[in-house]
Image (cartoon, rainbow over all chains, first blue to last red; front, side, top):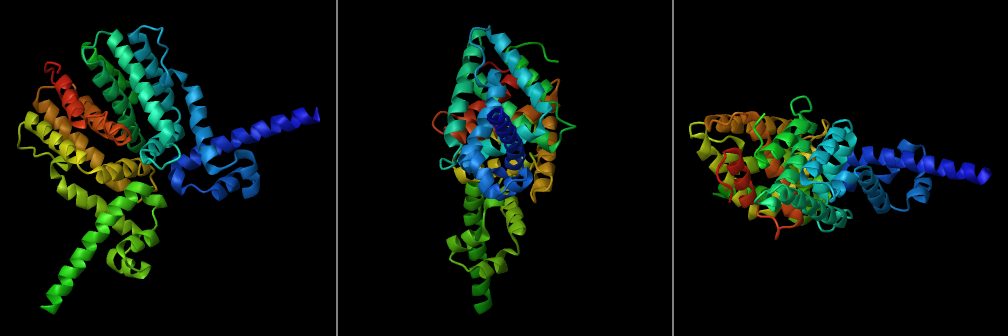
Length: 192
Length: 192
């Protein structure tokens, strides 16, 4: 019983750390974020925090991976679905993003920082963009789009770029409506 | 003559500092960038650097404004031109970006960081996005687009988002061709 209680406590602590880390990385970026600040937010000593997370870099990757587990549909749209359904599933991700500003900030800042080859999340984003563009290329091809690779790249770009505009002007930017408009234009659906 | 020589030297020094600052902010972001590192890159003491730039924040704004002077066509497309010509002028900016990775990195990282209201470049990007979206809305309206505001937002988003993909995979992403494809789709031109 004691061991199980310790385990549950450790897991709760780890979840708290990841939640606080999302906020800190989103506010400061990875480079400027300090583990001492994070420890203070979590009510831990610096050494206590390191015991839980190993290193700043390991913490970053844990944060990124946790989000992608939550959004399996973005990371790898189900290829057994028809292309139009896969594109529809993307809108669910955008819808969810509207309710979690911190996660959007996190990805916005980290994906920009991580374009630098020396950044510890470089390989993560490198692989992620390849995978998402490839999956959406297949989806557009399934819809009969004559240039599915270009449509896929531009749809991913629209989703990323809209995040910056939405973070700046949340009341003026309807991310879901704009992503839907982008898909509609690509598929030659009537304009809303 | 001595005074003029001093003036020219001061100006050359300032240009050197701005050039090095573009590189440093692009690599590290604003928050993590250190004026001590910048001073070392410029062969100056920390105090000597402060004499030239005033403060880290003033330096950041000088860097941002310098780029926008160079790209007047992006910041405020000439409203006396027909809409199609204004959209064409955007492609020149993208073309120029392909030859200056450092500037693209800079804007990519800073625009993400600056979505935070406390960031010293927040007001700069807030105003810049409003202006660019408004100008492109007018351009699309001039082309008879039925939803010019949406087309403008998504075109700005595509340009921003493509920069992340291009920085990650420069050999796979043709930013000029993709921005052109986006404009073509909006204006119902035949697909390339």
